[in-house]
Length: 288
Image (cartoon, rainbow, N blue to C red; front, side):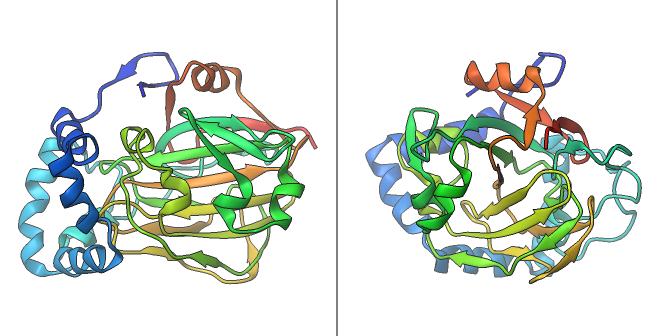
């Protein structure tokens, strides 16, 4: 799947990473290794290693390989690879729009948008999902049919903290245990990753966009999904949580008649392309 920025310029994925993923997902020998790597115990072990001080030796090469500028991030010493991976942005560097009815991206990511059909099905890159299979609920699909689903895919070089997109009352968190496939689109050709991976979801009864269904999806070699809050009142732009190492995904579902996504993003999604967005960037508006 191609990824473009808002000007239409194509962005190139890390080719070395793509070769590794093709080996794991498309070749028989690689799939044998993959069956071990996706297990939760392996991800937890990897998380412990990446929390160690020794792992900090890999930070410099990771920054260089992915051309990560530290201009926007806190200036401090990072004690481990995961400490760097979950680095915080400087205040004001991912500010949300001053217009509350404008929908802003919750995270730095590659965005795809899909309609939720009246039968509560949606198709992600030729893979058919049902809302029931995504959320393990029979009640949720009825409420969101005819609505809009946004998939924000975070690559390893992205800022891995995510925010609430509106003021409102947040529900408790619901966890669905699973495995840890990569969320790279290549994997979705082989496995229905969004209904197999470990994930958490909650509902935000928002002021401007209806009841937003929010889901975080763990991915290959991700040690943890860290959500800060249980049920409570939250604010637009407030940090909701973060992912430890690995590419991950945030999914937002909006009820029918609540939000309009900008045309350029919809056109890219219809053409099978992701759109690169940054946390706080305007991607749509309320039509409530």
